[in-house]
Length: 469
Image (cartoon, rainbow, N blue to C red; front, side):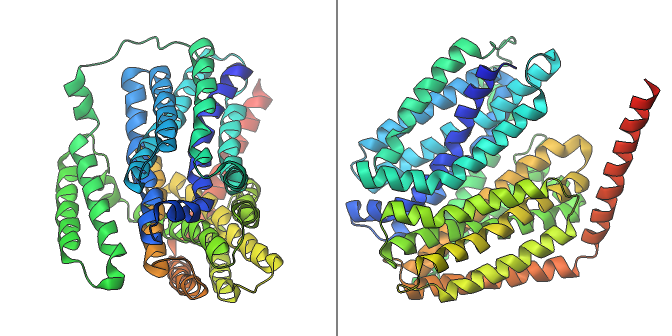
């Protein structure tokens, strides 16, 4: 794969992380523009992640059926249109719809990009696959890390609408590069529309969306009492989803795999909890910095920079370590310390203290992320590794969706010191739960030993092959 092809793919992939993180410092000015509270703007976060949790595995299947270049270009067009539509949003509902379309559009680049890389690997030409995959991963992490800072700068100088409009020139560049430089789809489109929809498990996707929306409505209304309607709908659609996915031959969520691998189910649970804390901090802390601490969006973005930056650095260092249990234990401990430190954040706290809290809260994401991926590598059946990895990404987005509802419960009209401290207590409780689960699970230590032995064996086999050549 040539350098310019790698640049085009990276350009498409980075849009998802950038749009996910820039919104963190835009929620307060958006709520001021449309005269709405924190509960309403929470849908800007949950809407994108709900769309992404469904769209990423769906776009991956479409790339196999329709061709990766077609899907890659379609995603860029959709992203550009969503960014343009958000610029003219007359109300919050329109803006939420644009964010949903944005989530669908930005979800296409990653799976279709990997499909293009896989095709190039078979050709055996150009830049090594490991280098390309590293570039994709690092670019996504860097954009997530610098998203609040970039967003804060754009908002301060050009208004919050600019964080959406910036997608237009980027997608135009990516689209031109894709059309001229990416290799064409060699295969014809497989099957008709009905067969494509059947292979996507459209009913399972619809039930999953209905369940998550109902659950969100229930959680967001808890502060004013139990909303029985959304709760009943969530339970009914959840039951139907379980029944459907158990019977489906190509399920959106592979219930049978989860039922036969209990350790894998625990890994997904830890992943949801970890990202529940991460996204609650990422969006909740940034809102408080603007409303509670009174910082401008650009300054709030700089204070938030350590959360994702330290997390990305920790993850990069962890990739060289063959750990599972120790990484999960360290992640849970730092998560507990970081969420506890939120009690010391206040409207009179120094910026250095607030940045230090952000840095501490970034460490557990890097530790837990890599360790959970290592656990997944050993727990998932080899024949179902792709589906298992897709569910891990879905678990991340479920954590983000739950985080948006938790923020809305604690902030009500706006982010205050009391609201942040209450949010911190909830997150501390989640951290304690994760720590207990890690400590009492005897299989995690065994997995760590097994991973070290497996990798050592693979290295020994490679050395033997080299010596016999």
